[in-house]
View 1 (cartoon, helix red, strand yellow):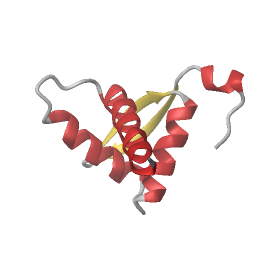
View 2 (cartoon, rainbow, N blue to C red):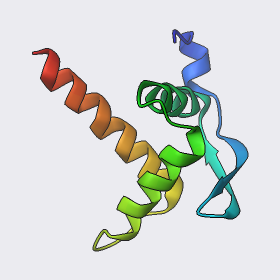
View 3 (cartoon, rainbow, N blue to C red):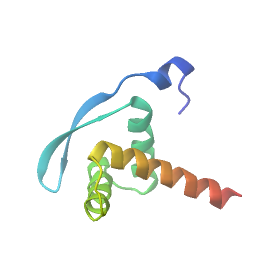
View 4 (cartoon, rainbow, N blue to C red):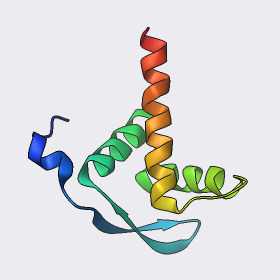
Length: 87
């Protein structure tokens, strides 16, 4: 996944996804959609199943962020964990 410099600043793209049996829309930048898809593939999960897991974690937070923010934060935390393991 190698995006050109201009592509990392692409505005959010809205996509519909079904989680916990209901349809919802999520707006994420293409970079985050790509990272989310890679994380789901790495875990051998469908995209909606990974988003559902993130949603469950999000709603248990003391001050739950919006779903798109939760996804971005989860992805960042996941990448940081992989960086720590590599060290």
